[in-house]
Image (cartoon, rainbow, N blue to C red):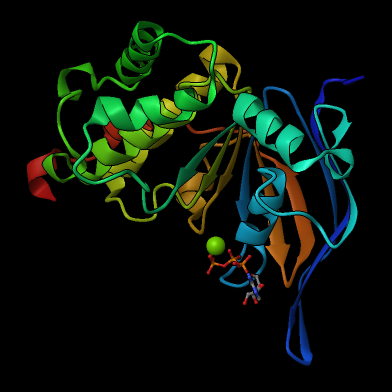
Length: 250
Ligand SMILES: Nc1ncnc2c1ncn2[C@@H]1O[C@H](COP(=O)(O)OP(=O)(O)OP(=O)(O)O)[C@@H](O)[C@H]1O
Ligand SMILES: [Mg+2]
Protein backbone atom coordinates (compact mmCIF):
# COMPACT_ATOMS: atom_id res chain seq x y z
CA UNK A 1 0.00 0.00 0.00
CA UNK A 2 1.49 3.33 -0.93
CA UNK A 3 -0.67 6.38 -0.02
CA UNK A 4 1.29 8.69 -2.37
CA UNK A 5 4.17 8.77 0.09
CA UNK A 6 7.36 7.51 -1.40
CA UNK A 7 9.39 7.88 1.81
CA UNK A 8 8.22 7.59 5.37
CA UNK A 9 10.72 8.06 8.18
CA UNK A 10 9.57 7.27 11.69
CA UNK A 11 11.91 8.20 14.54
CA UNK A 12 15.03 7.23 12.66
CA UNK A 13 18.17 6.99 14.77
CA UNK A 14 21.62 6.06 13.60
CA UNK A 15 24.42 5.45 16.05
CA UNK A 16 27.99 4.58 15.20
CA UNK A 17 29.86 2.71 17.88
CA UNK A 18 33.53 3.67 17.88
CA UNK A 19 35.34 1.69 20.57
CA UNK A 20 33.99 3.03 23.85
CA UNK A 21 32.34 6.01 22.21
CA UNK A 22 28.99 6.19 20.44
CA UNK A 23 28.39 8.84 17.79
CA UNK A 24 24.71 9.66 17.56
CA UNK A 25 24.52 10.86 13.98
CA UNK A 26 20.71 10.85 13.72
CA UNK A 27 18.61 11.34 16.83
CA UNK A 28 15.04 10.56 15.85
CA UNK A 29 14.28 11.91 12.41
CA UNK A 30 10.69 11.76 11.19
CA UNK A 31 9.27 13.12 7.97
CA UNK A 32 7.53 11.94 4.81
CA UNK A 33 8.17 12.68 1.18
CA UNK A 34 5.36 12.41 -1.36
CA UNK A 35 5.90 11.09 -4.86
CA UNK A 36 6.92 13.93 -7.17
CA UNK A 37 8.36 16.24 -4.50
CA UNK A 38 11.69 18.01 -4.89
CA UNK A 39 13.20 18.25 -1.42
CA UNK A 40 16.55 19.66 -0.40
CA UNK A 41 18.25 18.58 2.81
CA UNK A 42 20.37 21.29 4.37
CA UNK A 43 22.48 21.57 7.49
CA UNK A 44 26.05 22.28 8.51
CA UNK A 45 28.89 19.81 8.22
CA UNK A 46 28.39 16.83 10.51
CA UNK A 47 24.65 17.45 10.96
CA UNK A 48 23.80 14.01 9.54
CA UNK A 49 22.86 14.71 5.93
CA UNK A 50 24.93 11.95 4.31
CA UNK A 51 24.00 9.50 7.05
CA UNK A 52 20.33 10.21 6.33
CA UNK A 53 20.73 9.98 2.57
CA UNK A 54 22.52 6.64 2.88
CA UNK A 55 19.57 5.31 4.84
CA UNK A 56 17.08 6.70 2.31
CA UNK A 57 19.06 4.99 -0.43
CA UNK A 58 19.17 1.65 1.45
CA UNK A 59 22.96 1.81 1.54
CA UNK A 60 22.76 1.79 5.32
CA UNK A 61 20.18 0.80 7.91
CA UNK A 62 18.91 2.79 10.89
CA UNK A 63 19.86 1.65 14.38
CA UNK A 64 16.29 2.40 15.49
CA UNK A 65 13.09 3.49 13.84
CA UNK A 66 11.24 2.56 10.70
CA UNK A 67 11.88 3.49 7.13
CA UNK A 68 9.21 2.77 4.53
CA UNK A 69 10.18 3.06 0.89
CA UNK A 70 7.08 3.13 -1.31
CA UNK A 71 5.14 1.54 1.51
CA UNK A 72 7.64 -1.25 2.13
CA UNK A 73 9.38 -1.42 5.50
CA UNK A 74 12.98 -1.91 4.42
CA UNK A 75 14.00 -3.53 7.70
CA UNK A 76 11.87 -6.52 6.72
CA UNK A 77 13.86 -7.15 3.54
CA UNK A 78 16.77 -9.47 2.91
CA UNK A 79 19.99 -8.12 1.42
CA UNK A 80 18.99 -9.34 -2.03
CA UNK A 81 15.51 -7.88 -1.86
CA UNK A 82 17.00 -4.61 -0.68
CA UNK A 83 19.48 -4.55 -3.55
CA UNK A 84 16.69 -5.16 -6.03
CA UNK A 85 14.50 -2.46 -4.54
CA UNK A 86 17.41 -0.03 -4.62
CA UNK A 87 18.21 -0.85 -8.21
CA UNK A 88 14.64 -0.35 -9.35
CA UNK A 89 13.56 2.65 -7.35
CA UNK A 90 16.62 4.77 -6.70
CA UNK A 91 19.26 6.59 -8.70
CA UNK A 92 22.24 8.04 -6.84
CA UNK A 93 24.33 11.07 -7.69
CA UNK A 94 27.41 11.91 -5.63
CA UNK A 95 29.63 14.96 -5.25
CA UNK A 96 32.64 13.12 -6.64
CA UNK A 97 30.77 11.70 -9.69
CA UNK A 98 32.18 8.19 -8.96
CA UNK A 99 32.64 7.31 -12.63
CA UNK A 100 35.01 4.56 -13.70
CA UNK A 101 38.14 6.10 -15.24
CA UNK A 102 39.38 4.91 -18.65
CA UNK A 103 35.81 3.81 -19.38
CA UNK A 104 33.62 5.60 -21.87
CA UNK A 105 30.62 7.68 -20.89
CA UNK A 106 28.34 5.14 -22.55
CA UNK A 107 29.89 2.20 -20.68
CA UNK A 108 29.68 4.08 -17.38
CA UNK A 109 25.98 4.65 -17.94
CA UNK A 110 25.46 1.02 -18.97
CA UNK A 111 26.95 -0.37 -15.75
CA UNK A 112 23.80 -0.52 -13.58
CA UNK A 113 22.05 -2.46 -16.35
CA UNK A 114 24.37 -5.43 -15.98
CA UNK A 115 22.40 -6.36 -12.87
CA UNK A 116 19.33 -6.74 -15.03
CA UNK A 117 19.57 -10.19 -16.65
CA UNK A 118 16.54 -9.61 -18.88
CA UNK A 119 18.24 -7.05 -21.08
CA UNK A 120 20.15 -7.94 -24.21
CA UNK A 121 23.41 -6.22 -25.11
CA UNK A 122 21.59 -4.14 -27.64
CA UNK A 123 18.84 -3.09 -25.24
CA UNK A 124 21.47 -2.11 -22.69
CA UNK A 125 23.20 0.05 -25.26
CA UNK A 126 19.98 1.71 -26.41
CA UNK A 127 18.85 2.47 -22.90
CA UNK A 128 22.25 3.92 -21.99
CA UNK A 129 22.26 6.07 -25.11
CA UNK A 130 18.75 7.27 -24.29
CA UNK A 131 19.90 8.28 -20.79
CA UNK A 132 22.90 10.12 -22.26
CA UNK A 133 20.55 11.90 -24.64
CA UNK A 134 18.34 12.99 -21.76
CA UNK A 135 21.34 14.78 -20.20
CA UNK A 136 22.31 16.13 -23.64
CA UNK A 137 25.56 14.21 -23.88
CA UNK A 138 24.87 11.72 -26.66
CA UNK A 139 27.68 13.34 -28.66
CA UNK A 140 30.19 12.47 -25.92
CA UNK A 141 29.40 8.76 -25.59
CA UNK A 142 32.95 7.67 -26.42
CA UNK A 143 34.69 10.12 -24.10
CA UNK A 144 36.30 8.89 -20.89
CA UNK A 145 35.80 10.93 -17.68
CA UNK A 146 39.18 12.67 -18.07
CA UNK A 147 38.05 13.87 -21.50
CA UNK A 148 34.96 15.55 -20.02
CA UNK A 149 34.44 18.72 -17.97
CA UNK A 150 33.27 18.47 -14.36
CA UNK A 151 29.72 19.38 -15.31
CA UNK A 152 29.71 16.84 -18.14
CA UNK A 153 31.03 14.15 -15.78
CA UNK A 154 28.24 14.95 -13.38
CA UNK A 155 25.72 14.70 -16.22
CA UNK A 156 27.11 11.26 -17.11
CA UNK A 157 26.65 10.33 -13.45
CA UNK A 158 23.06 11.59 -13.63
CA UNK A 159 22.48 9.54 -16.80
CA UNK A 160 23.82 6.51 -14.95
CA UNK A 161 21.41 7.26 -12.10
CA UNK A 162 18.52 7.46 -14.58
CA UNK A 163 19.25 4.41 -16.68
CA UNK A 164 17.21 2.02 -14.56
CA UNK A 165 14.25 4.43 -14.71
CA UNK A 166 14.11 5.00 -10.95
CA UNK A 167 11.19 6.80 -9.35
CA UNK A 168 13.52 8.71 -7.07
CA UNK A 169 16.86 10.47 -7.36
CA UNK A 170 19.06 10.92 -4.30
CA UNK A 171 21.90 13.40 -4.62
CA UNK A 172 24.62 14.19 -2.08
CA UNK A 173 26.23 17.59 -2.71
CA UNK A 174 25.96 16.87 -6.42
CA UNK A 175 26.92 20.46 -7.26
CA UNK A 176 29.60 20.69 -4.57
CA UNK A 177 32.52 20.55 -7.01
CA UNK A 178 30.99 22.74 -9.69
CA UNK A 179 31.08 26.47 -10.48
CA UNK A 180 27.89 28.52 -10.31
CA UNK A 181 26.95 28.25 -13.96
CA UNK A 182 27.51 24.50 -14.11
CA UNK A 183 25.66 24.03 -10.81
CA UNK A 184 22.67 25.87 -12.21
CA UNK A 185 22.80 23.71 -15.34
CA UNK A 186 22.65 20.60 -13.15
CA UNK A 187 19.75 22.12 -11.19
CA UNK A 188 17.92 22.95 -14.43
CA UNK A 189 18.27 19.29 -15.35
CA UNK A 190 16.97 18.25 -11.91
CA UNK A 191 13.97 20.57 -12.24
CA UNK A 192 13.24 19.14 -15.67
CA UNK A 193 13.38 15.57 -14.35
CA UNK A 194 11.13 16.56 -11.48
CA UNK A 195 8.58 18.63 -13.40
CA UNK A 196 8.45 16.81 -16.71
CA UNK A 197 9.12 13.22 -15.67
CA UNK A 198 7.71 13.39 -12.17
CA UNK A 199 10.87 12.06 -10.52
CA UNK A 200 11.00 12.50 -6.78
CA UNK A 201 14.24 14.23 -5.82
CA UNK A 202 16.02 14.43 -2.49
CA UNK A 203 19.02 16.68 -2.87
CA UNK A 204 21.56 17.35 -0.13
CA UNK A 205 23.25 20.75 -0.32
CA UNK A 206 25.05 23.31 1.82
CA UNK A 207 24.05 26.19 -0.38
CA UNK A 208 20.86 28.26 0.05
CA UNK A 209 20.94 29.37 -3.60
CA UNK A 210 20.73 25.70 -4.62
CA UNK A 211 17.95 25.00 -2.13
CA UNK A 212 15.95 27.84 -3.72
CA UNK A 213 15.40 25.57 -6.74
CA UNK A 214 13.52 23.00 -4.66
CA UNK A 215 9.97 23.19 -3.37
CA UNK A 216 10.76 22.12 0.19
CA UNK A 217 13.76 22.23 2.52
CA UNK A 218 14.40 19.99 5.50
CA UNK A 219 17.02 21.47 7.79
CA UNK A 220 19.11 19.21 10.01
CA UNK A 221 21.10 20.24 13.05
CA UNK A 222 22.98 17.78 15.26
CA UNK A 223 21.07 14.83 13.86
CA UNK A 224 17.61 16.37 14.26
CA UNK A 225 15.16 18.09 11.96
CA UNK A 226 15.03 21.70 13.11
CA UNK A 227 13.00 23.09 10.23
CA UNK A 228 10.86 21.68 7.42
CA UNK A 229 9.54 24.38 5.15
CA UNK A 230 7.74 24.68 1.85
CA UNK A 231 9.24 27.05 -0.66
CA UNK A 232 6.42 29.13 -2.13
CA UNK A 233 8.65 30.82 -4.70
CA UNK A 234 10.61 28.06 -6.35
CA UNK A 235 13.30 29.64 -8.48
CA UNK A 236 13.61 28.48 -12.05
CA UNK A 237 17.16 27.28 -12.69
CA UNK A 238 16.73 28.05 -16.37
CA UNK A 239 15.90 31.66 -15.56
CA UNK A 240 18.73 31.83 -13.04
CA UNK A 241 21.08 30.62 -15.77
CA UNK A 242 19.82 33.24 -18.20
CA UNK A 243 20.36 35.94 -15.57
CA UNK A 244 24.03 35.04 -15.03
CA UNK A 245 26.61 37.28 -16.65
CA UNK A 246 28.17 35.87 -19.81
CA UNK A 247 30.63 33.04 -19.20
CA UNK A 248 33.73 35.02 -20.19
CA UNK A 249 33.15 37.50 -17.36
CA UNK A 250 33.67 34.76 -14.83
N1 LIG B 1 30.78 5.47 9.49
C1 LIG B 1 30.81 6.34 10.51
N2 LIG B 1 31.39 6.00 11.69
C2 LIG B 1 31.39 6.85 12.73
N3 LIG B 1 30.87 8.08 12.71
C3 LIG B 1 30.29 8.48 11.58
C4 LIG B 1 30.23 7.64 10.42
N4 LIG B 1 29.58 8.31 9.43
C5 LIG B 1 29.27 9.51 9.95
N5 LIG B 1 29.68 9.62 11.23
C6 LIG B 1 29.49 10.79 12.11
O1 LIG B 1 28.12 11.14 12.07
C7 LIG B 1 27.96 12.55 12.02
C8 LIG B 1 27.17 12.94 10.78
O2 LIG B 1 27.97 12.69 9.62
P1 LIG B 1 27.46 12.96 8.16
O3 LIG B 1 28.49 12.45 7.23
O4 LIG B 1 26.10 12.42 8.02
O5 LIG B 1 27.41 14.56 8.11
P2 LIG B 1 27.06 15.55 6.91
O6 LIG B 1 25.92 16.38 7.36
O7 LIG B 1 26.89 14.77 5.66
O8 LIG B 1 28.36 16.46 6.83
P3 LIG B 1 29.10 17.11 5.52
O9 LIG B 1 28.30 18.33 5.19
O10 LIG B 1 30.45 17.46 6.04
O11 LIG B 1 29.14 16.10 4.43
C9 LIG B 1 29.35 13.12 12.06
O12 LIG B 1 29.64 13.51 13.40
C10 LIG B 1 30.24 12.00 11.64
O13 LIG B 1 31.50 12.10 12.24
MG1 LIG C 1 27.93 14.69 3.83
